[in-house]
Image 1: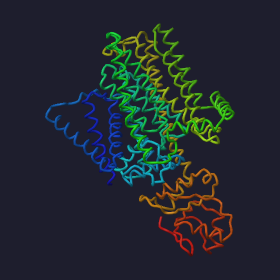
Image 2 (image 1 turned 90 degrees about the horizontal axis):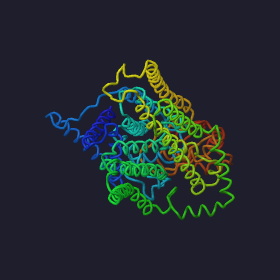
Image 3 (image 1 turned 90 degrees about the vertical axis):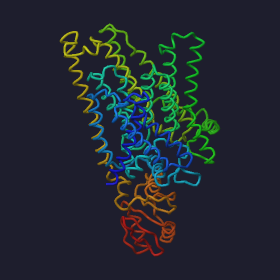
Image 4 (image 1 turned 30 degrees about the horizontal axis):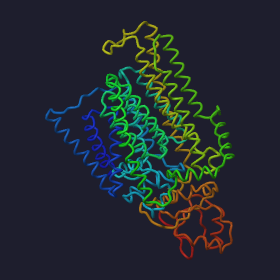
Length: 617
């Protein structure tokens, strides 16, 4: 039960940081994600100087010491934090969050990209204690920043390394960012508006269906962190210091999550600049002073925001001679010259077909968001006779969609091989991130608009009699009930969908591999052959990446074709030190019988000059 002790230490550390940032003025709804982002930046600093493992201990134990300090102050009646109270949405977040944690804790990793980068990066950091170097060829995508991997590494360091623990860690980051949306509510006791946001959280997973939460990919992390950033810009609009610090923190971590996060940082920075110009204290200043103040804060924040990423770019340039997916203007120019106008036109035609495809989930999401915002604007404007910002919000999210379409097309043209680009690989994944961002933006604005449309605007007077008529009272109660009902149902749908996916994955290669061999935790250069009867797994390098991750080696190879002579087969087998056969492969079994006179079906074997020797799983 050492994981219980480790979880306790980790939790105490988080609570210590939470108590600290709360006393610095951070909103209680933003405090959890703020703590996680602060820890990521601290971990990043330690990792960049080669002290990752000591850094994990220092960061966590400092949090524990902070908690003890604030507890002692509270014991003596000093520095007690105000408690706002618990609300219905808190129960929804805690209850369903715990259920999802339980499901993720028993979920296997299956998606290709877990083994090509995300999971193998966490495993590397956990068991080596440092960032990859030029000779650590087990890491292929060396230019990918390590933010989420560092956060997950800290968690599994304390609770123990497992696929379930990694998934839980990433879910904690997502759930903390999701909790921030409740900071925008005017009256948190209203079930209708609060559960509108709960429903939004649940519905957002529909547009993450290609990935789901049982993977370590960051396609959902990027938009939900951006949402937390936007919430902070609004909530701290009268606290310029906190506002600038929040933007710098969220933007810095976004850039350290993935290179493609630049678009989301631009969205965050644009809203931040707009809020700086329109915040009331700025309006009373004369324009020269106001101009200098706004641009000074904005520029300073962007500089601080960019510094960690610039450090990472320097690290990649000086550590690796060639790096996959590295940001390089020269590489982009070369790719554009190679493609030619004809290729670009073909890609554009294919891209446009996908955009207007009514069966596309992202297109359906865009139409849904547009329809809801426009419908609610008309309803509130003409039925309640109130001006509202929903139409402006609609225009803003459509601008976001348009710009992201343009940047996505640019990625296909400039950064992706033609064979993948013409298939629009990952289109729904990438667009789904933007749909999720727009969904949250629309829902947050709508929740405040609905609150302003209530008959009674004094919170203290809102009770069972605070309605214009019995009709509006019944409508409010029915609307609240439906929001609660569908928020629970939709979240359970995601939970059950994850369970179903786990059941369907029982016959996949990673699950089969776990049945014949134990995973390795010591980085080696062992030559491992993974025998796979499915050509697609081998041709896509899925089997090879899985072998590298599972056996923690940079010499894992997947092979399906064994149609060769006995001499060639023997020479092929002797090239490896170990062979894993998670699923029966008829040709391999026949060749083993002919060459070594052994009856081999499945298992984990050591290669010797006379054949294969079974190893303990």
